Length: 180
Image 1 (cartoon, rainbow, N blue to C red):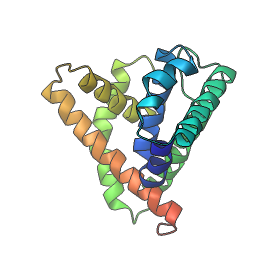
Image 2 (cartoon, rainbow, N blue to C red):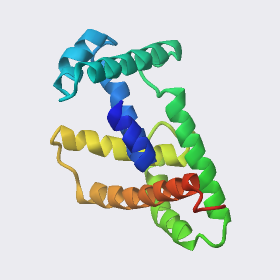
Image 3 (cartoon, one colour):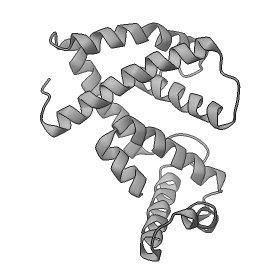
């Protein structure tokens, strides 16, 4: 909860990846709040009232995941809405001739997006979701200490650079210092 709040304010992309991880943590613990509390929340070096608030936050997410029918797979509507907001900004940035840095980053990333989409079953998945899925998959591979090819490293580096720029543009727009 504390991490999520800070990430949402500072870097929307890191927030979204964090929330996907939280969804997976909930699933891995079979939607059992006591398991989540004992395995995760208790480890936070926080006062009991903060731990209680974190537990309540997880309980809310568990309820949302159940009510939205994403027990086995999928993402919360609130997370999908972030991708929709980022996609809206992405389209506006591409249409705005003054954002050549953004357009350039996108077109450098596009071959990797196309390649990922041809390899995946989710051909109807939005481009940005493809990027986030690649970044999330990369993070999982690193956590599992799996070998990562140079080709994958190059793709992730470019996708990461592009998403970082989009995140900054998103933050700038929310702060009122970007208008497109």
